[in-house]
Image (cartoon, rainbow, N blue to C red; front, side, top):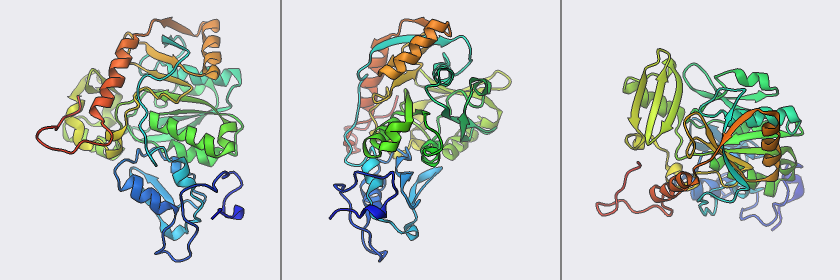
Length: 361
C-alpha cells in the first residue's frame, strides 16, 4: 500500500515501493525501523555511516556506540531509513573502481596526514565557488571527533581539522541538519559514508542537488572512539598527548608531542574492530567523485583517483594554479590493498573454526 504523502517531509520522495510496513499506532506492531534493526544492526553488518539518521522523526540514535532506536518517537512507516541504508539488501562493493585518471599529489599550501590532498581539494573547491561549505571531522585534545563547517581555506590551516582520526564521526547527522541551509556542500567520508551519499542522492532529490563534491577516503577499518582511546591508553599510548595517528604497513602508529611514537600491529586490535567493518570490501571508495589515500604514493604524497568530471575540474584548476606537486601513483599497490580487503572481509562472513580462522594483517 502506498505511503500517504503527508506522512513524510517534503524532501522525502519516491518511497511508495519501499519494503516497509505502514505506520502503526500500537508500539508492538512492526514498522520501518524494525527492519533496519533486525536486518542490519542485529545482523552485525551496520557500518555506522549514519545515513539512516535522515529519519523524519529522529527515531534513530547515532552516538559513539552501535546504532540504537527510540520507538517512543513514533515511526511513521515511511521507509526512508531502509531506502538509504547502504547495508540493507547488502551487496559489497570492491576493487579499485572506475577512474578518469590516477596521480600522486602533494599540496604546496597545506600540511596534512600525507599529501594534504583532501584539504587541498576542499580548499580549492571553496575558492572556485564549487561549494560554499565543506563538512570536516575535527578533533579535541583527546582525539575525540566532532564536525566543523569550513567556509574558507584559511580555516584548514588548523591542524585539528586536518589529518585522519580513525574514529566514527557524526558527519551524516550534520549533513541532514544543514541540507536546507546551504546550496552547495562538500562532503568527506569513508567508503560506507560515500555509499550512503549515493543512496541519499538516488532517493531524495534535495541531496543530489546540494551535495556537489564527495571525497572518499581509502579505508580498511574504523573504530568507536571510546574503545580506541581506552585500548591505546591501556597500552601506554594516551591520545591526549598525541599529535597524529596513522596506519601504515599494517601498523597503527601514534605520534606524540615530544616526537616519540607508539606502534602496534593492526591485527592485534581485532577485538575492537566493529562488526560492520568485517563485511566491508570497499577500500578505495569506488562511488566517490575523487578517492584519496596514502597507499600507492611516495612518503609525503597522497594517491588521488579522479572518478568524476566535477573532481577533474577541481584537480585541473589546482594544477593550473600551481597548488600541487604531482607524481605517478603506483596502482598495483592500490590494487593489492583492494584485493587484501576482500580477502580479510569475506561476505557472507566465514564461519569461525580451526580450519578457516584468519586474522587481519
